[in-house]
Length: 148
Image (tube, rainbow, N blue to C red; front, side, top):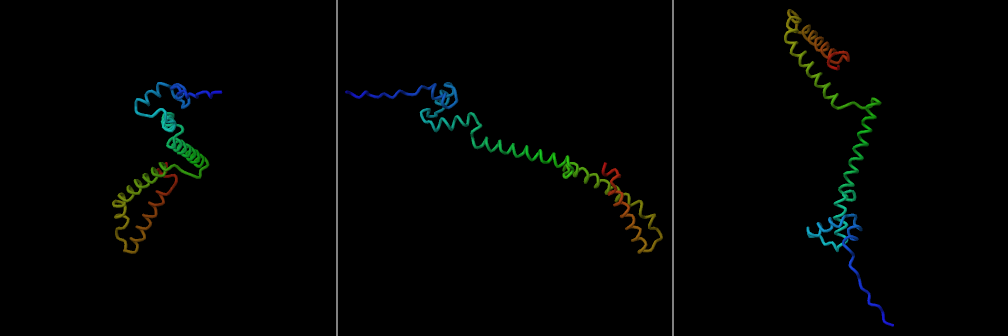
């Protein structure tokens, strides 16, 4: 008995495209770009790039987004429970404090001379310290305009 001659039938373009999750038109376009459509490795790599979800870059991006979302939720929870404050609020507070301190220091030029007139050096030092203490107490006061 004669053995039948085996013939290998080339896989159709349509079945190659289907196996890689693309259309035959896409397969044709890739072939025109120079991709060897008989090479499964090249097709699999190109298909992963087209679909994007399977690439290491896309997986890393999804992981970064997931971590960022988790950090954002943790920060919101910390702010809600009062164990954290908003950096913008801190910056605004320090800015207001700087403006108030500057205003007080500039006003000292007019406030101090009459307060110091006729005093000895040691009494001037006491009055200046008292003035500075009053200014710092005003700025630190939670009811002052600095903290509103």
